[in-house]
Image 1 (tube, rainbow, N blue to C red):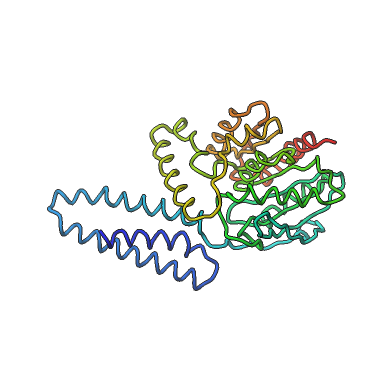
Image 2 (cartoon, one colour; image 1 turned 90 degrees about the vertical axis):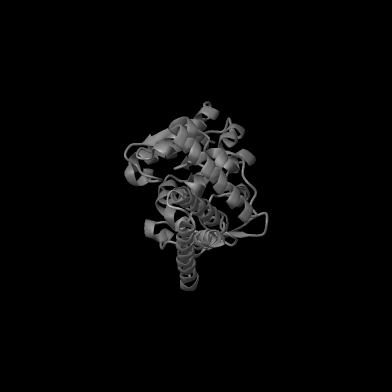
Length: 345
């Protein structure tokens, strides 16, 4: 049993903290931990089989299921709460025809967010947020569309991502601190009308945007694409949609959330459903992929919490955060049109 427990912990640590690391030494240590963990689990299962009589060996099946479940819960929790800094993609604003200023945004707790800023031509501006494990380079195409319509664009690396300082929290729990810091950067610019600032986020960035809007009344509007949830409290819709399978998944998510919360100093954020209620009547546009049923279920669940302020656009044929790539004309019409109306002078 000791070998089984140590093996599970080694596999989870390797998957969550070692294998995703950028450095070859750390990554190698991660693979080694996974390998040794698997060896310990195999040895433990063999010894358990030897110690049991023939029919009692059927108990090894639930034990193995428990091992797999523990690895999943611990591995995901470690990656979310204490995982290594994600690698950054290549690219810069010039690749999409933008001239941007390199900026550094201070947060309220002493970290600094690396960013690019494209000045506004209309007085309106947006904070642009990427997804988990990515960087501002992933949203360059979105920045080009927004800047092309006259918006000032501040694209920042999330904490612990890209060139920003701090420990990454891959579910975006630092968004409540970092997004308002980015808003403060924009409102400090003389060319930006402080009453015309919005936030556009993809996946984790969309969840950060919704959460920040609940706390920061300066955020005039939110566009959140590819949102599902960033903690167990955001996924109560699973049992309504999937029945007993959804209830099982909710239980797994609760365990993963508990592990992540124990490993990160970030405070657990307000649930997204409560966040859209608090943000009302300020408008929120949820963009869901037509090929992503869970995004559509999550969007409908959030819409029901604040139907007067939340709108949903499902992009036919789109995958996760692929609305712009799938339907560039529709994305510009729906997203930029929404922002034009929401941030009108």
